[in-house]
Image (cartoon, rainbow, N blue to C red; front, side, top):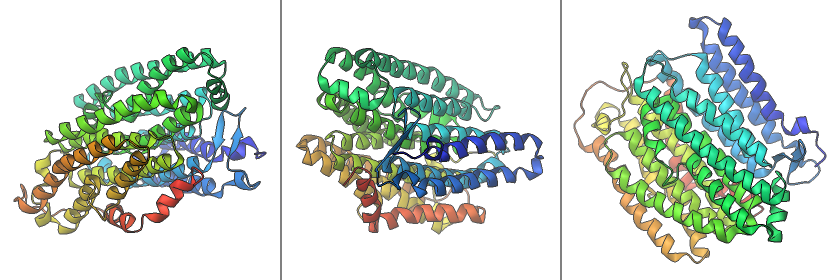
Length: 480
């Protein structure tokens, strides 16, 4: 608890300094030697992970430490999410290197923007006040807007970035308005003080009014229906490397924002925000699965799949229990790993200036490269929730949390639509194994890419068979 503030925020300071250093280095490095930019970026992630896992704030036996007038918090949940953010961003860098070279987009901007977005993710994960939450959120958003328009020659990317910017600004406005209502009712920006004031029962109408805007803003950032309208267009319009990033690391931050705002700050209004989350989760699961079935573009299919998965994440939050929070945390980590592998396969098949974004591009993949077809099959099976794969256990944990809360009808609905949704995942498997390929060219990628995507795919099976350790880590983050 008495740990110096700068030591608590050491991972964030390292990422900030290195993002600035990489930006400067990129100005002076020639095009042929830009590989050093990726090396520096990955070293940043390695050292940030080492500093985070040291857990200096635990030296006194405390479960958390606060800094900067209690606006910043280090706790087990935050550290676990940060470490997985580093790991997944490492995968993003490995997959993206191949894509950026093929499409002639290998520039310093990609690495500096993703590192600044990571800094926003880390701030949001450790936010302990409304100001820190908004600061982290906007750092992620502004970096993401620029990343979507990263390919300056793509009209589709520019259009997607404009839509994302306009709708994202509206969502940020709603979130900020909700925060102002909460501040007006409680007189504080600190989440612990807000929790105390909310528990006293004062200004309940104003608080509930502000809560509606908070939940709407969070739902947009999470990509939950009916605030998902930006997701398919942005996933489709952005370069595949950018879509890969947006679909993974920021989701971990959005989950942390949900936990910090709703359970830490507004826990006394559980009955109110639970009703809102029930509606959001039902709409997300239903709309996400039904809309994904109709897609012929795999990036849009995975976008609507994301909507469905976010519905499952919200299910674990409904009971407001430590078990439910641990189940949701496990789900969001598993989802980020699955999404990284899914979009990694899209990048793997892309080449010669053309993205493999249509389902037809996966036809006959088994005949072109049986190993990568197997990797994609494991990813699709995991997303569908087929037993033995880790996606099944993620779904099972959140459904169990819902059943324990007595919401049997909601658990049944989730299972039914999960079965319906398995159609569009299995369709990809059918195309790979039972259809003739459009082109006969064998699939080949650099060794580092092939190793990473293989590890990522095998992880779907390995984590499923040995999921107890990761589940235990997630549960321990909430004191179980």
